[in-house]
Length: 267
Image (cartoon, rainbow, N blue to C red; front, side, top):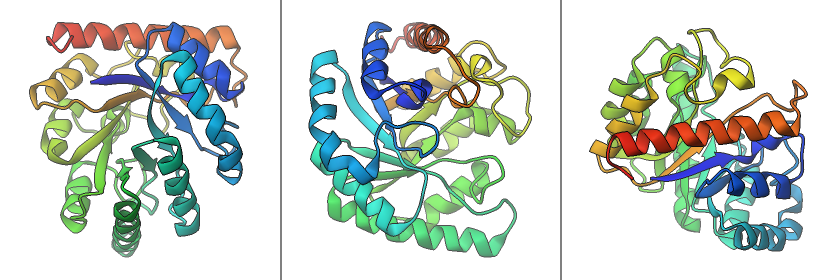
């Protein structure tokens, strides 16, 4: 497994700051945030201008470009993301599921949308991933399995986030085992309780919450998963976290992930 972090953790700071401190914390790679309002990192409207800088930052800091998070399913927006990914060398694009839990019509719309985007991803030679998200059309294991059945494209994969599965009322360790055949990316973080949101950024750091992340990573290893495991901490920009606070979260979470890998014999 390749340990990375989404640059959105450093959403209040420039892209090089994210590269610099994630490298210092010992990560293997980085997931670039293209999340409008949460960062000014992978700005898709300026991707051609940013591409050389991103490639150089990857080389300078020794961080692999593991993924990009671009939440919108808008076809034009997603095609821009795919074009940027091909040029820069990013293999996985993560998007949000959209829709609304329990609404069958919206579930079908989501399946149709993701199916078309997966065919586009095939054309570009990249992988499109989507994760279960509290309140969305895909929100738990049964809805994830239904989407896996609906979309057979080899360019479509599941992005698993244990915090969302935990907050949906399920056991993330059991959930990951059920969908592992199509898991191509992992967003990882902790959370306290089963409320709608993930909590304040500090409580999302691995080891600070209630999720069995040791068992989660052990299950990934037992099933032969070798893809990206990217820390995704949201909310630091909106809550005015200092650079020191962001660095602390990055380092603490990376240490916890490394210990999990060592505990299950993956490193």
